[in-house]
Image (cartoon, rainbow, N blue to C red; front, side, top):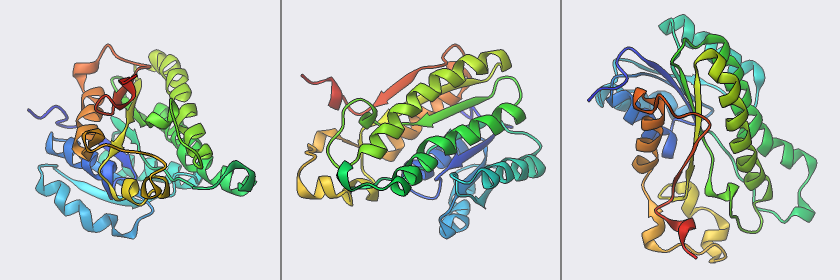
Length: 245
């Protein structure tokens, strides 16, 4: 089933991990894909996306924390494809420091990429999308339950859920849906390089570790017409990790 024929999707942080899995999934179902990423290797991955079935795929260099780069990415997407139907706000960064050591610059860097960046893309999407468009924000279970040393990340993801609700209300007037997913522990380099995981401070059981494809499937559902009556929602994708008492 190709649910995204004739659709165009921007995936931020789409060069690796959950972002790349999402780009592959949307592309395999017919979407034309734009990877928006600061990673210079992003262009080398577009062939894998077209190989999976996407009619076209391109990578645009974009630091989502920079307003001008976000605006340019959306403008370049419209120039190349003439439309924009889906935005997946996936790009994110983490810091690992106690609150007493965090500087204002470190807080602003995380919030700029994880929260303000998605807000920039939402604004640009609302201005460019047609009716029926969809935005999916990739939050985290850290928005609900967290660990030490990641306060800016957890705060940014909690704020992203609030942003999702606010944007869903405003998007209704434009007939654009806005939803979020909350991944748990996902098998990516970001998970295993996490100092809290390496030290054992954040304990992860094998059964709690999902695959990037698991999150991509949830994103694809929320972006599709099958979810036409869903907006302002958050879909937890954590294998039940937070459901246990």
